[in-house]
Length: 157
Image (cartoon, rainbow, N blue to C red; front, side, top):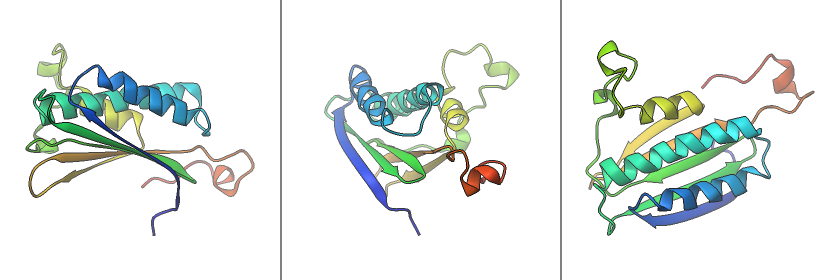
């Protein structure tokens, strides 16, 4: 059963790189009241930038008429960030491994890797009529003294 959502923020932006900072500012403002430390918030911002860049560049092909929809949903134990474009979709399994020797010096191709590295969970959904929706999830650290903290850490999904 999904956990109840305590706060939801929805944004719809045009496919322009300058809009990334607007969404990042909303995330930063949202994180200020959550149990997320500054370093974790920084890396979450990198993951969000990567998701937005992919949606604008690869999904919507830099078409400023196409929108990118963003949803920040704060629950009791974590935050979900959803980024949805109006593109034609893609196969995440077909994206080259940025750690492969042939790809180490390439300047592109690290976005999905970063999202996976900096978030606890990443899921994709592909619309029947096109579009890609990526959901980034970050768990809140258990407060000291809680049952979860006393069990030796967070559970793996």
